[in-house]
Length: 168
Image 1: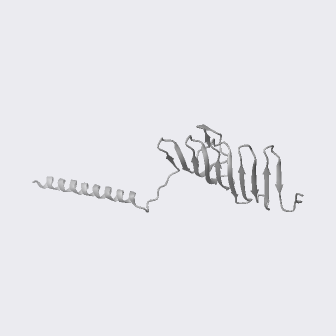
Image 2: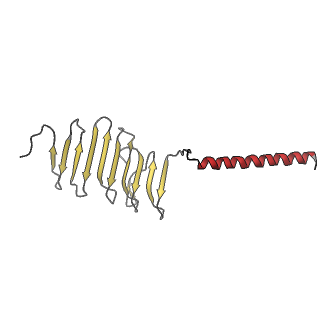
Image 3: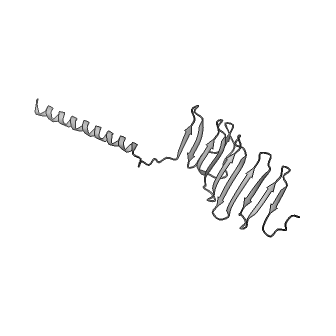
């Protein structure tokens, strides 16, 4: 074998070994439990291909029945749960404006938040429970003191606040 051919064979062998070693190292790194994935979002789909969970920074605007329901009050980063028809069924995240953290559960259409917790960094917390017929209850510390409000199906509000006279 000529000296040039021998050197070429040695160089090709070295490159092949280096490529195999690098590939094996990359596969080991990709399977490492210490691997950190970085992305702006992740969509988990069910067996029919329907998105069911969205993790994003920010997440998309809400939808119900496959149609957009309008923009969010402010961009939201977090997790959104979707029903089998694509309607938003709830989520957990932080708003870019105001710094609030929220947790919601929505009705089957995605149009009504039937359970909502809001934690505001400057104004305390609020818990809201609502029915689709607009009755509901709210417990809040928004104004610096505990407050409880009930709303009946006619829209009338009943409040319980510290310092208010008790109902007979």
